[in-house]
Image 1: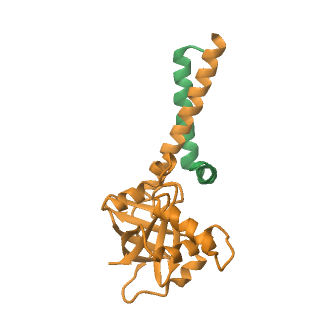
Image 2: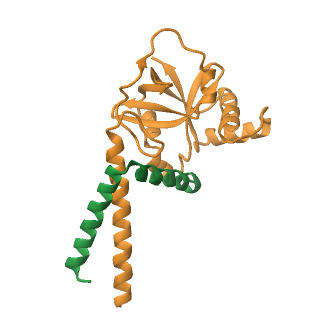
Image 3: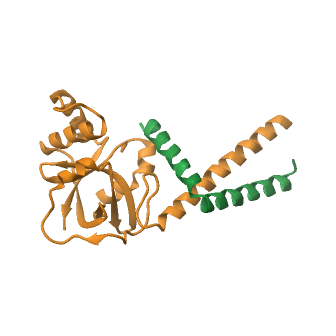
Length: 44
Length: 182
């Protein structure tokens, strides 16, 4: 993959991620639940 | 060499999406009325403002987390609450860990002087001043409640368990703040 295509992929992935998080609240809530579990387990 | 490049590209993509996700959620939550457990929220607007005498705080035994707003800078956190001897306390654990230093910035802020804020529980807002309790026998009651409420230790909590939890607090691993009225 060329650098140009890779940067396009990164930009598209970032935009898609932001849109999903803003438009589908349950996705963000699920990620938060995962983060809570991770932090509770690893914050020692 | 080509495989290494592909692996690094994939790794970079995953890290980027992770950072974008965390950043988006943090920004999104920061403008909300109240907080979630992980991300700080914005100014608490909803709920009546309490005036008058202090309530019987024992009702908080049935409440797992509360929202606490610190005023300067304005940010709201969702955290544990403990009632002991008629007073209420909030707990911040993991304070000596790296993740704790990142996750629990509110406690460092409060200890550094950003100690005025608002507690919201059951949709009622209570103006509060945070007073850190670092030592003293008051920690016995707080430690006992902490163990019973959040660690599932059967009551009455043993003196050994209380002493261990109190030592953890006095060593600075967990910070306790009294939510005093103001």
